[in-house]
Length: 108
Length: 122
Image 1: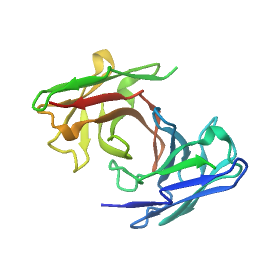
Image 2: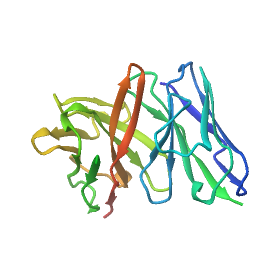
Image 3: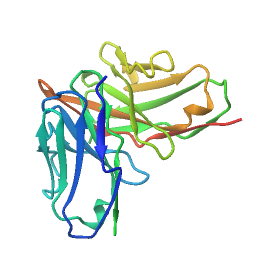
Image 4: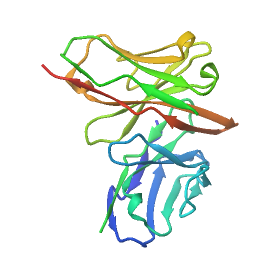
């Protein structure tokens, strides 16, 4: 099974800060990685697919990069509405999917 | 408008059976896989399994194989997740989501239901 390790598990940042979350796969998954945002009490929402492609309608302050085993999710300028938990998800061995354990983002 | 609408919250006792639903609208229900995701209280997302309503082809995560049954009734555009004998550890929020494969090896869940909270307690 492919394991996904996200870090940090939580972080606190100020409005306007650049925020970075990493996700590491236990084996090479090429670019088969998505990022989701889950706000409290809500369903997850797709933000980034194929590691670096922004889903339609998602603000451009969100971005993703990486391939192979190491991936990065970035918010270029944190906004109050970005408070959420963020999950990476791999799909290298379809139709099996694995989520990272999540990163809870709070405003300082 | 694409929508996935899930059935309401359930409170059950250990050993009882349960079937929750996810009704799709605004798109061709038989042309997209529907996945189920578990979220235990205060925890992360776990992929459970997926079904193609067009032919009921179903795949399960090894962690959930034999523990739940995923089915679909394409005549009413509804997918189901069911348990034959609930345990307290099944207490969780359950989400359905539409799987999209817009290109080879491009695969994600683009629309999600609102979630169904299942509470199992004696």
